[in-house]
Image 1 (cartoon, helix red, strand yellow):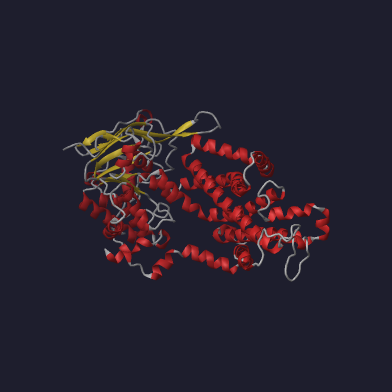
Image 2 (tube, rainbow over the protein chains, first blue to last red; image 1 turned 45 degrees about the vertical axis):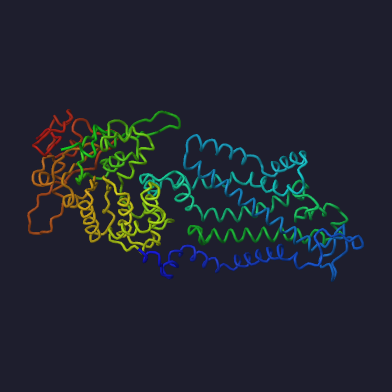
Length: 304
Length: 321
């Protein structure tokens, strides 16, 4: 039947209405739109910016050390004479990438384990959730610091540090997510359409990936944004403490390390204010956007 | 006659009531308490009873959506509660369930084309290239346009959704369908369409139905044999004509007297039942209906009536008969 495959454009549009409607409502929220624009700018700044900069991120200039902002170096130079603006951009690449990658990793891990726990129940559920409980009962920062310190002992090459940081952050991020997803799956599991899927003889894999998880997407999207913010913060904290991504690779976190030095802190604010502001504004923007998305996707949250 | 398609022997399904955190169940809800019946190939079997009589539990236990407590269910000679999961998945194509509520039995996130096509792909009844054609044909058969395939469930009305649910069950080309009050959530005008769809499909495909309903007039229209269920047991089982012309059990009489007749001049004698259906946790002693029966005698309180043959195609469980 060839007629089946020709879908009128109007119909196709109608079928997406839940998402388009949500998107339309999101556009009405001015702070959310502002945050989204800011984040897009931040991405452009980090990923396109370095291409426009005349300086290399690691290019040192011994004649221009710790120079205040000028026409040539808009944000001044650091203690090796490197251009702070250019380093801020490349640092943004690392920080944003780590934030996003750790979000994706913890989302995949959390959603998968949460779905498996919720779907199968019983001993599988108990085992996964007890592990999650244990991880949740330990404050994540000390845990990260301990793991990072252990890894430093193993002398991991600096190039690989960034991947290890991503994995560590996802490792502490997934339990919260798994718990949320498990709760959702448990309630969805009692839905009539899942019983219908049982009686239709569908496989567990199909039920989990086609029937259960798609119904948690609104929750996943919201958690994903918040997880990205948490990832960026965690990475910055670790790098600030010298346990995350280490020099010479710049990240916003290890750039503020310089504020540890009292003289630099007092006399050379161009060294630490820009990366500090970058972290602060990006995290706030992501959280505001996440909140707005939650309001839009969850009708019960309206008016709160 | 060869063996029946579905043979149920003394089926029981008790749900435990848990009270304390660890402790043993304090009691059991005896939802289905010893039911035996047969459904022949191509037969539409009606199951009638009020809310809480265990009709849906019976239907769901027959398809092993619950594990039975005891008894036996033979589907085409195979005991479906003892076969392996793999075999059961295979048998799923031959027996299907249609849920009461077409609003909750379709996943809101899945296009109806996928909802119908998915089981076909799963069971290898269609390939990726011809699944669309097959789904289109089934939709047409159930009175829906194939172009609706790309739409989501929320874009349809209740009647359309029920057609989709029926189409989804029919797509697997089953031999046996348990239809659990498939029309009770629909408008009367839509009910008629759906009922006609059911009887058309039965004629075309030699389907057997277990048609669960609390509405006698629908069952009368569709089914050739009817069982009346009360508190987990069958109180009367007869062919349609026999049951409607010659009801024996007081409960059946009461149900029949409650069927509206569109003739205001007719003098109706209505048997009104007092009170509610008793708790299936502690069913009354003796005849389960004695607490509400207008004709109850001492024997009814003490002895459990057996399901006896009233005549060739009529069985009843009542002392007064």
